[in-house]
Image (cartoon, rainbow, N blue to C red; front, top):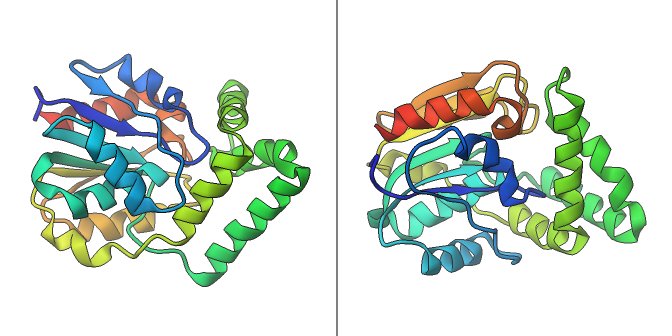
Length: 227
């Protein structure tokens, strides 16, 4: 797997820059694509698969993890290894989906700029570097409200992937920030327990955006997984 391309998928409201610090610390061929603007996770997965190499290792952050699982469901023979970073195999509950819809409505009504700093505070470790928070806010602003709305619709409607986890045959690793309040360490452990041979890395001093908060630890964990 080490010689194969490594594809890293950004999360919601993230530009490919969310992986820059990690990529700078890793060896080899690493690809960080833009996430297509669509309101269906499976359609996003299909569009990415159409443009990627025949075979590759794959890791996804948050929404990128939902997409990675959709890609695994569609084309497992092309994926040499699977990394799931601050994500979950579960579908949204109806309450969670409604919270997403309510947030989109507020953003579209003119509250997007005010939402971003609050969201960054929730996502990051309570003692996160203010510079990291500023990067999260800047990425969200660059993504924009229209893409945010379509991606939130895709996330809210995504299927539950827990039933497929036991059939994952490639090397798998799960990373999660110790203070991730959105996709918690408990959800990470659930995936590790279900995926044969999967490993778990809990990243100290991080919340939900581990590639920005603790890039050294994330790069080291992904490098061990690729060996």
